[in-house]
Length: 270
Length: 341
Image (cartoon, rainbow over all chains, first blue to last red; front, top):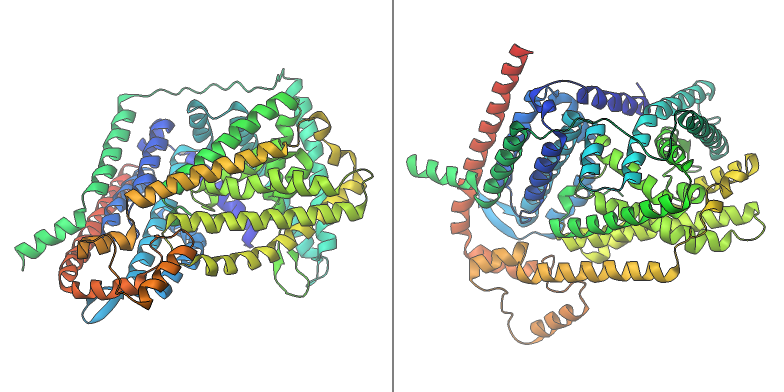
């Protein structure tokens, strides 16, 4: 499978996951969005040399992934795909910060290595959490939440329109790209000239498609606003979910649990 | 170019979220006032078009590598600044949520870096100034290339400043700038040339599209005073919040120095060293920030290594136990879910 076809495939896969049914899927989208924001806020608010206190946060994906029936391998592959960004920026920390913070078995561990580890942990935690949020909430749920939280109508409608046509147009892009690949023996036709004609035609077709969509919307009494039926109700389960997770995240932020567990173990088994 | 959450402090992320949210609110208002409802499907479908266009690559001559369209400047040219800003923001939301391309806390930064600069600087101040009167191919090519390059340079500078203000990376300002700007000059040139090629193709095939929605948007170009005021406000807010944050909560290494030595900052010996230090304070970008002075801190930290070692061992031990527990919970839940599903 070519790389672009794979990204289309993954887009579909995320959408399919969001369409599943599980206890986590049934939680109100607003509750999940708030919980996610508290999670991400706590994770990024640590000092840059913090490593051990970040580890308890893995409990969140460890619980939500199996409950939400999200395959671990799928998520891991997506994280690995974007990991180079964090490595690219973080790799400079061990180079510039060579202060030895502590040594283990005679090997000095520099501040840079500690902060690099911290960056990677934060990256994995925040990326996994964001992907998890979409996979158990769905894009429309998130848009509805944004609108409830005061995001302007024009923007939430834009998000929903974009998402609706995303699948149609990316599939078209993949088809065009494949058709060209089959005809361009080696390199022929992959240059800028043919590329701009290809994209230009895609743009013209897109433009005409928008006009047809507009006609269709007008004939269905479109007046510039969407009316969507969204049964959103905050039940007690939703409130418990948000409060329990949020307070857990805040406690993990205030108390370094691994440190405490480690001290306790060292005292018991010296 | 897409920033990740891991390199961002909550303060910087929050400030940029506020800036981008203001931009979205302002543009939504303008779009509602000046564009007819015809724009609703057009904006949505053009957002999807950006993804579709990114599925198609082209070979960059002479290098053997391939590139694709970014789309920010093209959207500004087709839709005008306000609608383009909204479309770019929506594209970034989908990229963050589905492709993990840029984090959610970093979304404010990404919308600002990739949306504000093409829509409100590159398009009105460069493209529209060049493409005036009788439109020619030369003007189109020149305008879109220059505007794309300038927008991307500003965006890359934004990434550098936001990352350094967060204080997670150790990269010095000069190194980071020397690393980011030339790379994005190359990317910007490719983006500019591609945009120019697509714009001239569209101009020949259907010239109306380039005038498209902007004929209906008399105030489509944001007045220069408003842009300056907005930039100034962002600068003041950012500077104010960051300096407050930096002074009241000493971050990173300074914090650990204070913990170890009981002092906020290490005292330097007299003589040339202190003179150099004061000079460095004067010329440094964001003085008193923790990405400097690491060499000085080394000596004091090593003196107290034994007590730190104790903390570290318990940290590593406890960390492994907690991590194992977390995964054990996950494993049990997975078994449970399989049994019931």
